[in-house]
Length: 284
Image (cartoon, rainbow, N blue to C red; front, side, top):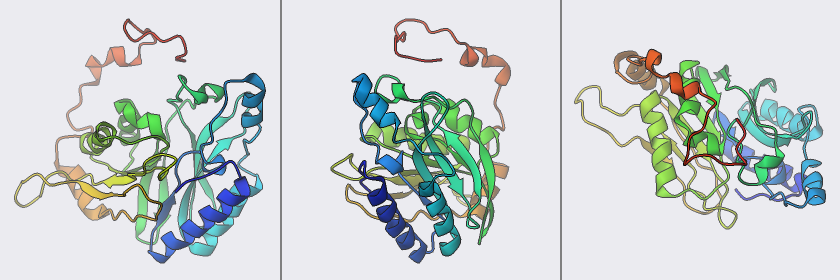
């Protein structure tokens, strides 16, 4: 998908794509990052920044309420992204709406791109997992947003909190290195991952999903975990996760939380930064 600063147009376009997803029998529709304003750029000029921040909406605003009603109509969950009104600067958020129209959770991007326009946002301070009731049964869903996926800790915390599937709204050019990172997040956490990115010409598409199951149970052979990778064009792409196989795999294999050694991980929670990684724009 591609978006714009026109929130009405984004709502109309988003609805059309949700309807297409429902026709494909999707349980969850996932939007790219900050869909209500189409990840429109924030200028560094103070007045322009204030105008950009003023586009933020609340969880009770019409844009969110509309998609809550649509979720009920379509009997389908929707992971809706938006610039969320917040005390002080707004947040880069995703709300998971279940098929009954309830807001199960709202996650704000923890790893904001402070080197760029997201310095104008308030970072989130936690990761969340919730139980999503689908027609196929309950699934433990976690969310992270774009730059979050480049930090192993994001998906790791979600796995430790029980996530079986991790949804990832995105807004950047996806090169092979970033796709490889995302594949690794699925492998090391034994969790399915699905990412929705903006299409060309805004970014380059390549929305993708990877399975959690890296080895065949019978033969022990490695398997390609790529479920789908989109091209650069707009579209609705379906990722099919076999939850029975994922759960059986998680119960028998050695990754995830099976053999971790947390006692050795102290520096991971240190607030200090050593050269060459010191950046004046970074917020801890």
